[in-house]
Length: 301
Image 1: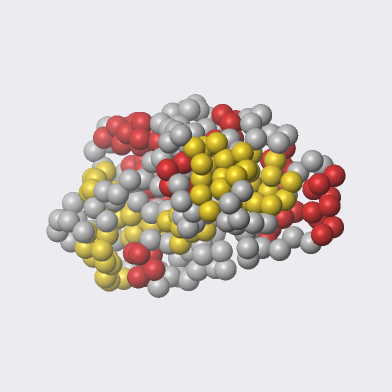
Image 2 (image 1 turned 90 degrees about the horizontal axis):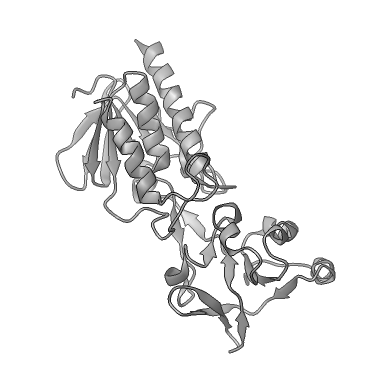
């Protein structure tokens, strides 16, 4: 495999695999770097709200797409992180993986997602993906009609709490200490039967499989069977090292063709989208980005 028109895809999740499939359908070779660490959604037992694959395990979906790619013979897989990137468009990029030899390519698609920053709450990691969900559309249905907690850790969440009543009539909002909610809004939620708790959460209480409630900093325990908790996020080290332009939400800034601030490097998936991250959105964005790369390759010939 030579560098001419070979595309490196950093990230072997839904966005990266979708990009690889789109490139293969356009006769473009790619190398997919899939980090050996567990995938971001590895704690989830199933992917919800994915047409045609509703309820599929994340690992099974990845394996299905990999199997489809095998038939094209245009995609190589490297089980490694990318430690560094050197070079530029028209000079070729050289990627140094965490294991193995450097690889030279013509363009790069960053599809390595974000890193969730877990809160300093005992038991959070244990129940993440089981009873604690970051998206009601993905995991909320399976915990419908149970007592829910909703952690409000972003200002924009204060005005949309009512949406979670689509899944549960028993809601309590748990306010992040850095987020304020005025008295009028609290009274409005109280009239609708939605409680507001301002004492910080100290610990998740449960049996190891399912949570039963949360212990607060003042020692009280509040029974809850499920939570919506959207952790803060950061970009992977390789994205930070590339010094690409980011917006206020921490997304990689791209143009309408998914080109980043560094010519020849594209970004897609959760790296460029924060509002409603899902497997379906990642697949769409990955394919759309790859289509733009195909266009740029064709126009440069």
